[in-house]
Amino acid sequence: AQSVAQPEDQVNVAEGNPLTVKCTYSVSGNPYLFWYVQYPNRGLQFLLKYITGDNLVKGSYGFEAEFNKSQTSFHLKKPSALVSDSALYFCAVRGPYSSASKIIFGSGTRLSIRP
Amino acid sequence: KAGVTQTPRYLIKTRGQQVTLSCSPISGHRSVSWYQQTPGQGLQFLFEYFSETQRNKGNFPGRFSGRQFSNSRSEMNVSTLELGDSALYLCASSLTGTASSYNEQFFGPGTRLTVL
Image (tube, rainbow over all chains, first blue to last red; front, top):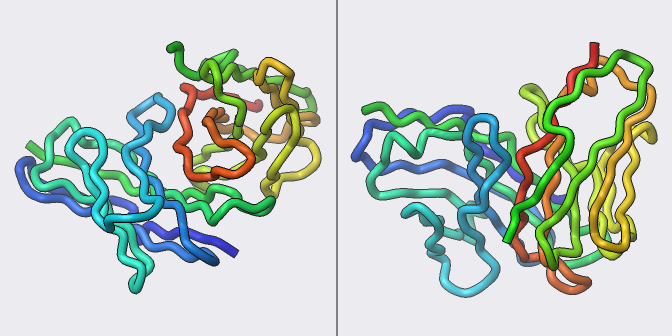
């Protein structure tokens, strides 16, 4: 069975500092990995995804994520945090296509950037 | 292109009633998925439809059902509402076809359902 874990409920970072939001996964075969962000009273917005190829994936709003197959991780990073990055972040995983390939979301990490 | 739209945005029902939520995907998207979001359980997958066929289903009781129409619009229905059904129900559409599960999803703003 596939699963995804976000070990931190909340991450607090000062503006201008680098940020990391952690995600680990478990899936049979090669995974498709996604990060989404949710602002208050809004639906989720796609940030970036890993399908294959380069382990470092760049996405929207200056975010990037590093796929590490040996550690089964897909951590979200940004070199310099902005107050406007404060939101709820979800990691998601989907296995290779099959009739049982559902997309599974992590529990979410609330990112708080202080001025 | 217009985004994913969901109606209604807010809904208040009482226990035992039933409710129907509607979702219009982005034009050209044929896959529609539904999720339930609650503070305690996070984002839980309900079901996924592609070309009017349910392709995947989450672990929810039979009171939760859905369908997709030929124009890709989708509805979900919850019968015999319980207090625990209070949640934000999100719909998402994607270009996912029969052999590509790597396309990202585009989410609507959600329907906030409150069961009293």
